[in-house]
Structure formats: C-alpha cells, structure tokens
Length: 370
Image (cartoon, rainbow, N blue to C red):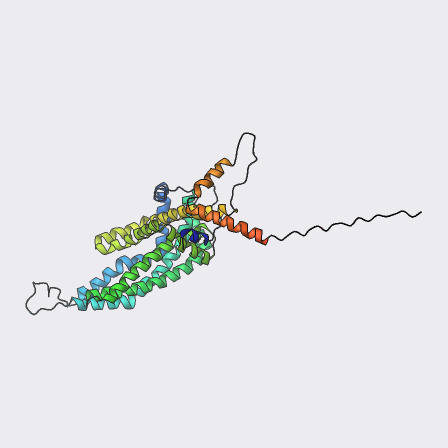
C-alpha cells in the first residue's frame, strides 16, 4: 500500500484553534521559541503537573531502585571478589544470589507499582497538552485554569489510553526484568535476548504513536477509533522524524542508568521543566504534521476551501490558487487530494438521478358551436 493510499484512509476535520494564526513549519525551533517566551508559565504548569500526577512515577524510576539495591546488598553477606583474579583460592562469588533476591523483589512488587504509576502520569497529560496546544497556536492560556479545564474536557480518551498503555508497559517491564535477571545470574539465552529486543522495539513504536495520539486529542475532536487510526498512519508517512522524537524521549529516561549523579540531575530537570519541554516538542511536531496533511486534506475535500472572489477586469483572482494547486500536484497531499476530488466527483455523478423526459403536449383544436 502506497503512502497516498494511506493518506486516503485518514479521517479529517477542522481543528479546535480559536485564532487564524499559522503554526511555524520548523517544529523544534517553534517549540523552543514558545517555551522560552513562556518560561515562567511553563515552570508553573510543569510543577503543578508533577505534584498531582507524576510524583509516584518519578519515585519509582529514580528513588526505588537505589533503595532496593542498597537494602539487598548492604544488609546481605555477599562476597563480590571471587572469579575476578584477586580472591583467595576457593572463594566463590555470591553476587548472583543478591541479584536473585533483588530481581525477585522487582517481579513481585516493583514492576506492578511502576506500571500502576504510569496511568496517572499519562492521564495528567490531558491538562498539560491542552495548555501546550494553546501556547503553540498563540492563544491566551492561563496555566492553572486551562490545566484543569483540559482535564475536564479530555479526561475520557486520556484515561482509556493511560490504562491501555499502563497494561502494555507492565508486560514490557516484566519481559525486560526477566532478561536482566538472567544476565546477572545464570546468563542470558537467545530467547531472552529476542524477547528483550522486541520489547524495546514495541515500546519505541508505542511511544511514537502516543506522540501523535495525545496531541490529536487536544487539537481535534475525533472519535477514539479515528484518532488511533490517524496516529498509526502519520508515523508511517513521517517515519524518520517520528522515530527520532520518540527516541529522544526514551533516551532521557535511559540516562538514569548511566550513574546516580546523572539520574539525580535528570530527575530534577523533569520535576521543574522536563515534562513541559518534552510535551512542547511533541505538540509542535504533531501540529506541523497535522497542518501538512490533515488540514490540506480537509481543505481540498471542499469543507475548508477558500471562497471565490468576484473577478475584476484585467485581474485573475484564481491565478494564485491555480499555481498553488499545480505546485502540490507532485506531493503526497496533492495526489491524495486529487484522488479524493475524483472519487467525490464520480460518486456525485453516479448518485445523480436521471431527469424525466418531458412528455409532448397534445394540441387540441376547439370549434365554436353556432
């Protein structure tokens, strides 16, 4: 299936913006400029979001593993110098026993609670993305009032997505924990490596879909099925950009595995500005894609086309429109728009009923009686 056919399957409608301003095409540059211009409001909004929704998740990611590792290895009598060439003869390393206890703790308690903490974190994005869409569109946004208004308006689709994503991540975390336990104890197998690689790829794809799905809930009023369909099609159309943005997001959390000091810095950044910055990049990138595809398809379908102006002598008001259409004929959106117009035109001609032929009238002559 070609990319034009994928564009034809998308559901399009008018977005929810209240002004007529256009979104800047350079998504990262636009996100950084908006973020810097509204830095104080972004700080307030990020701290409000973290305090209500994201604190359990941050505790599970940055604090709990450190406490569990210290508790297991500090209180246990484990010898870690065997098999490395400096231990006494006959000394056996018992480090694997400590890892067995640690990963058993992860399997029983840590993974379920971490998966549960993902649900309020994703649900809280309803207020965050409602504010961010207004900032990117240049609307007047009050951080606290607009934040709770977004939760009131968008709570249902965000709650459904949050629960589904939490269940999905629970399975991914169990698979990754099982593989890491084998790496640190008996040794990983080919099957565990396969499961681990597929878990990472599926997480990458899920975050890529969320990158378009959550901003789409804030910018449009699609049904859940239509929004999910569009969020699967758009990453295929803009594949490199979508994967890079999702990899940047996942990479921020993977930095916590490189050391305690770096994890502490990343955690503080997320508490004060991190979630608002990541959300700004997601929203700006998604709005750029929406403007390039959904908006053009909506306008080319006739619902959002420009009104025709009255022609004046010596002036051709349609010249600019014809030039724009000719320039778009070679693009994916132009090809999809032309195909939509052809299908709509053929459908109207087929459904148009035939006119009944006018029956000839009979001419009757009347004679006056004498």
